[in-house]
Amino acid sequence: MTIADIRKSSEQRMNKTVESLKVDLTKVRTGRAHTGLLDHIHVDYYGTSMPINQVANVTLADARTISVQPFEKKMVQVVEKAIRESDIGVNPATQGDVIRTPMAAMTEERRRDLTKVVRHEAENARVAVRNIRRDAIEHLKKMLKDKETSEDEERKAQEEIQHRQAAARERGGPDGGLELVACVCLTTHPTAKLLLHLVRQLH
Image 1 (cartoon, rainbow, N blue to C red):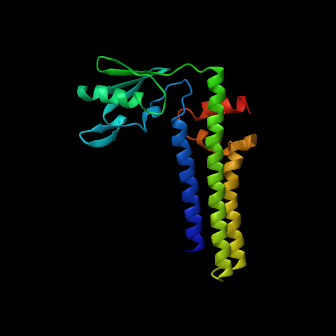
Image 2: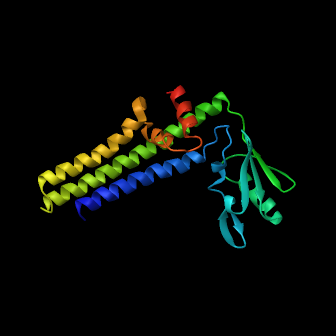
Image 3: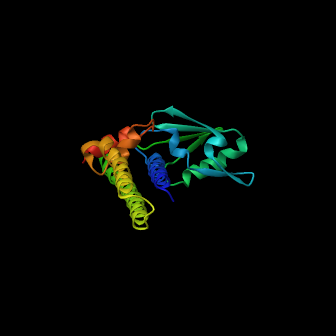
């Protein structure tokens, strides 16, 4: 493995960690509806597991209600059951061939629970990024020990890898453990800004 390989691998793994965090955040209910809440839910479609958005039209009926209209009427009950039994904790109701999925209003208790969840997810992501940096640096030190690279090249590579992790912290601002959540806020994720705002309120 070359230094370039180590850099590329560490960058890809860090990016994957951020993407994983974004997926985890889409499962968090903030009281505000967004269609991404259902993205991870699959249903059986003629023996094949399919995400709901490929067997139904998923839209927002209003700020707190997701509307799901299966393309095939016989899929209505299947989709409703999948939503009801999913891990997002909602209670869908069918009206004709449309499944309405209301979001519960945000209470202070729920706000505090949400804060804990987001902090936990962000901390997991931080630990993952630190471990990626550690692994990369260990590879570099081994290359130096085996005389596969020079001290200057090894030092520059270490600095670059550490800089990439520091960049995430800088984008997260003074909130410490929330730097990766802040990274998500720089994207178009539908609830990331709201999640970070809630956490900062109780920080």
